[in-house]
Image 1 (cartoon, rainbow, N blue to C red):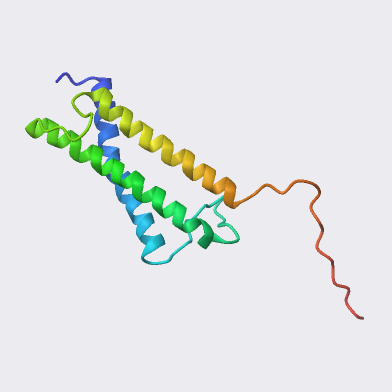
Image 2 (cartoon, rainbow, N blue to C red):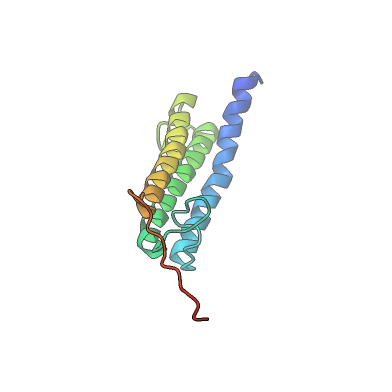
Length: 135
């Protein structure tokens, strides 16, 4: 194996799957086990009005993305070490495509969930009635 820029990027992508899988599984754990909805559908750091409504969808997306990352990690190691194929991991193009698609789909689906949880309010914003002091 010749060490060049492409090889370095391949290893960076592969090694980046480990913390991403951990982070996604940790978020699913916080949502399903700890019932902590503080990271569900955040928009500018603010959760939606009803985060419980979006918690299940967000948790399932995190579990699926984590499982895909673990599948890629194990598949690449198994092919390199033993030659056993559990997916299209016999070439760089195969596992790279699945890893990239997993990352991009996770980002896109999280964006869609965030936009659905924080709907855009059209028209003029209503001003809150001001209280008058009785002096």
